[in-house]
Amino acid sequence: MDEEKGAMKIKTTLILLIVFGALLAFIFLSDIKEKGKPEPADKLVDFSADDVEKIIFKTEEEAITFAKDDEGDWLITDPLEAKADKYEVDRIARDFAALEIDRMVEEEPADLKKYGIPQKEISLFFKDTEAPVKVLVGAENPLDKKFFAKREDESKIVLIGSHFKSLLEKKIFDFREKKIFQFETDEVKKIVLRSGGIQWDAAMEEEDWMLTSPVKSLAEKSQITSLLNSLSDLKAKEFVSETKKEEETAQYALDKPEHEVVLELPLENQEVTFFINKKDDKIYATTSLSSKIVEVEDSILENLSKEPEELREKEVADFYSWEAKKVLVKKGDLTVTVAKDEDNNWHFDKEDGADADKDKIESLVRKIENLEADAFIDPPLNLADFGLAVPQAKITISVKDGEDKTKDITVLVGKTVIDQVEKPEEDKETGEAEAKEEEEKVQEKKWVFVKNARFDYLFKTEAEFLEEIPQKADDWKKPEPEADEEEN
Image 1 (cartoon, rainbow, N blue to C red):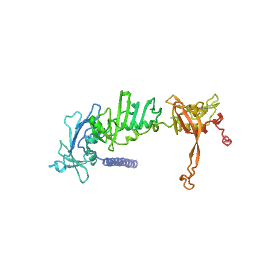
Image 2 (tube, one colour; image 1 turned 45 degrees about the horizontal axis):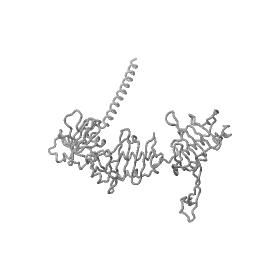
Image 3 (cartoon, helix red, strand yellow; image 1 turned 30 degrees about the vertical axis):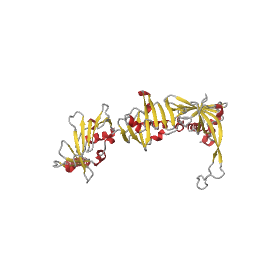
Image 4 (cartoon, rainbow, N blue to C red; image 1 turned 90 degrees about the horizontal axis):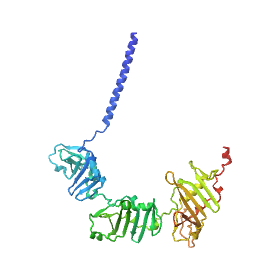
């Protein structure tokens, strides 16, 4: 009995020792983890950047005052009044409202001059505080490129990070909002452009941009968007005049500029005109709603110098082939209609709903999707001259338009024409085209005139897609499986 009790005691002791050891290990590992964590940095200033309402940034050359307006945007209020660059001023507020100390230098300095203090002063005015917190920044420490600094209301000298260098060297121009002609591009409803000898007008119709002069045509949306974005994003390289005067407008030839763009903004019931001119290899700009003249980058000229023909949408039909839900083909006495089900399989649109050849149907749809104009034929025109008074084929593709709607895109196919084009001879070894021989070799190129029923003008396109049009209904019939597939 005594032996059993002794064994129990030994067993209990061992269990307690194991538990105790586990606890010690846990405490030890926890202590290591805590020691491994970086200690929070001491801060010279410890406030929230959101509470900064005003900043005075003073250098040896100038003093700039920033203040938030009622909407929380930063303005420059002194030495001039202008919009401020939100990113740059927020950076001052963010970095100096919670300014970390890199290293303590001296608790009670006898002489501030040896630290170059102050070369810069940053005064932060916080919400609900009477006096500002002022940080005095001195010279750059030659050993580690960090900056000496102190709070005006404290004696200690510290070092702050070297990354402040770019911020501390900024001038008033760097803190200004450079985009001074900004507008909402999607609110523009009309454009009138005059650029040297180039003139064109465009208007938004539903969701499309249409050229209205000198030709009526669908415009390539990306081209118009690029122009509007380039105008809205114009950045000042230099502020030439803050309050433009008549003589200054004439000085930079902005009273008779080479480039003039009128934008209609009906949602705001206003019109703005951009005046842009090149003089002495510099590009100057202003608007009818701005008091400033600025110098801008010359990249804007690329968008201003495009001919109307370059802006035209070359695609015959603007849609995505995967959105096609139904296809109707009429060719002579033949009428074929096929529809796509929820499983993306095609069926003849009849009572029996026989399976149709998915590959052939979608091949035609993709060819129509990718049809592009080699040339445009604009009114006035005689449809009969292009085989379109009685088209050789009519193709209507119903595509998804929104959640529960579809829209029809109809392409009329006219007559084909054959052109003689130069045929380069390929080098058998390299495959590269050789120089023209004395006697030019030519090949035939087949084109076809087509018309999108939506437009009055015609397209001249490559005729390869004609091979995809069925000649009889059975052409689109789903092929029977091979015999060996049936057995499997």
